[in-house]
Image 1 (cartoon, rainbow, N blue to C red):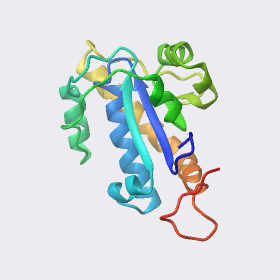
Image 2 (tube, one colour):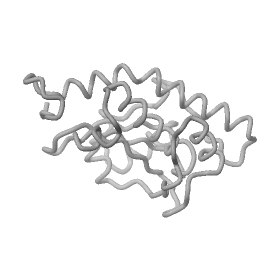
Image 3 (cartoon, rainbow, N blue to C red):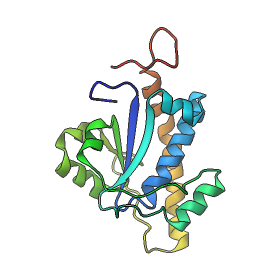
Amino acid sequence: MTGGRFGFSILVLCAGNIGRSPLAEVMLRSALASALGWTEAEMQSRGVVVTSAGTDAPEGHAASDRGLAFAAQRGLDLSLHRAHPLTRQELVDADLVLCMDLQQVTAVAAMYAGAMDKTELMAGEGVEIPDPHHRSDAFFLDIAESIESAVQERLPDLVARVESQVNDGGDPGRIELT
């Protein structure tokens, strides 16, 4: 993480923090831990964290029922997730900020322009993942699958970024600042 702390922090943003970003958060955390050969608890103990927030999130709301179901079908648990609004400190602390669409990129710029050099669209440059809120179940499924694909496409780069933080001494439990 930046700010003199060890590890690597990924912050995933959407509007309400009840659909896209929490789903991406649990998918990224699980896939990254698996790719690194760590449990999620080991990943966290090494300071590698994945969190989410919303640029217009209602404090305390649970993940959407559709998100809960989609995650559960993949063996992931969103039941403890509670939405919260994005804070400037989260942007300061994050090493990478992944946004679902350009509205979140604009919100990041307005809240903390210093985060723009570490802010990217989740699905890649110029590719937005639209908000499925108040849309059909079929549309939600398409969006959830788009998030799943984006996670898999990003995974090799994220693994390399995390591994680049590991000491040359070979101890995978020690993370070094870059």
